[in-house]
Amino acid sequence: MLDIELIRKKPDFVKERLSTRDKELPTLIDQILDLDKKRRTILTELERLRSERNSKSKEIGLLRREGKDTKDIEAQVKALKEKIDQLEEQLREVEEDLRSLMLRVPNLPHESVPIGEDEEDNVEIRRWGEIPKFSFEPKPHWELGERLGILDFEKGSKLSGSRFTVFKGWGARLTRALINFMLDLHRERGYVEISPPHLVKPEILEGTGQLPKFEEDLYKCERDNLYLIPTAEVPLTNLFRNEILKEEDLPIYLTAYTPCYRREAGSHGKDIRGIIRQHQFDKVELVKIVHPENSYEELEKLTEDAERVLKELELPYRVVELCTGDLGFSASKTYDIEVWFPSQGKYREISSCSNCEDFQARRMRTRFKDSSGKNRFVHTLNGSGLAVGRTLAAILENYQKEDGSVEVPKALREYVGTDFIKP
RNA sequence: GGAGAGGUGGCCGAGUGGCCGAAGGCGGCCGCUUGCUAAGCGGCAGAGGGUUAACAGCCCUCCGAGGGUUCGAAUCCCUCCCUCUCCGCCA
Image (cartoon, rainbow, N blue to C red; front, side, top):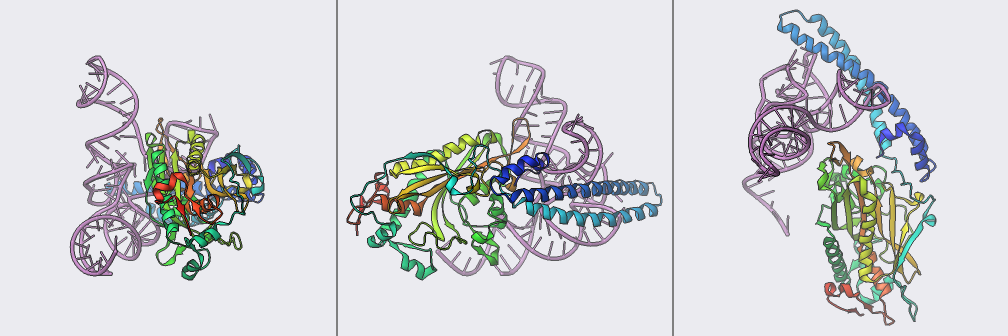
C-alpha cells in the first residue's frame, strides 16, 4: 500500500511513477484523491459533533452529582446522536471504497528501474558460468527425466490433472537433496530456518499483496477460509505483522522450504511440457526484514545469496533487472536470476529477488521504533533461493551425457548419494 | 467434537458505568548520583487519525471483532473470532 500522505502531497510524482508501469493507473490516483478529500470533510464534521456530545455527556454527570435536572441536555445529546450515526455510516462507506482502491494500487518503481513495457525491455546486468557445449543434440529435461524413470508425468496427471508431476526414485531424492543443500547454504549465510504453515488466512495474503487483486491465482479452502500459499514469502514476511520491532532486531534474515501452490490462471499453453510451470512446486525462499536506510544494499546481498546456489551447482546463469512494466505488484525493484536451459537455447527465470520497500510493511503494519523513538515501517525483501523444480530441470539439461545419463553436480553428491543418475 | 477459563499499552497485570487512555510492575529513553558498571533518585514515554506550512496545542478513535442498552461502556447484554486447560478422536 502506498502512503496516502505521499499521494496527497505529491500526486503528480506518484502518477508519473505509476504510469511507467501502466498508463491506466493515474486515474486510480485521481479517484483516491477524491475519496480522501470526501473522507476528511466528513471526518472533520463528525469529530466536531462527537466532541460536542462528549462534553455534554460529561456535563450531565456533573449536574447529576449536584442533584440538578438534566432533561434538556439529554434531549440535545440524543439529537446529536442521530446526526453522528448518519455521518458514521457515510464515513464507513467512503473509507471502505478508499481502502479497496488503495489495496489495488501497485508499488512505485524505484527511480533506478529501467522504463519499459514488458520483459523485452528488461536489462541484463551480468552473466556467470560457461554455457556447456554438447557434441550431440541436448534433450529437454522432460525427455531425460522420463527416460531415467525419475519424472512421471502420466502418473501426475492421473492423480491430479495437468501441471502435476510425480517425482520418483532419484527424482525424489534429488529434490530432497536440493532442498537440504539450499537450506544449509543459506543458514550458513545467517538466515534463520523456518518451517511455516502452508495454509494462511486472507489477511496474510493481503499483507504481501496477493489479495485482493490476484485471487484467481490462488487455491482456496472455502470451508475454512484459508488459502494455500503461492510462495513462502507470504508466511515469512507476515511473521512480524502488527508488531513494533526494536531497531536492533533488524535486519532479520529468514529462509524456508515450502511447496508452492499456484493456479496458473491465464498461462494456458505456456510451458506445457516438463516441470517448469506446475500447480505445485518446491521452493526455498529468502526473506529479509530490514531498516529502510539500507534496503537496497540488502537487495544486492540477497541476490548474491541466491546466485550463490547456482555458482555452487556450477550452472550458468545471468541476472536481469526487470523494467517498470514487468515489475511485480508489490516490488519497487527486482532482479531476476535466469538459468541456462540448453534444450531451449535460452535463459529461464529461476529466482526473483525484490525490494518491496515499505509497501508490504504498510499493509502488514510491521514497524520498528527508531533511535528518536518514532515508529517507522520496515522494508521487506524476498527472493527465491531457488525454485527447486526448475533447478532440478536445469541440472538434468546442463549435466546430461550423450547416453541420457546425468552427472550430479559436485556440491550435491554428498546430499544425493550418487555421482551419476543412469537409466 | 464435549466441558471450562480467558482475551486490557513493547511485555506482565489491576480495573467500582462518568477526570480511565487506563493503577502497579518489568522493559525503554533522558537527567542526577557514582572513578566505571550495577544499584539508587528524579523525570519522559501507548497506537492510529483530524486540524496546521509545521510544531505546540486542540480534537476524535482505539481495552479481541461486530452489534445492542445508556445522556455516557474497558466495565452491562447479544453474536462471532482467537488463545489456554481437561476429555474424546487422530498424524
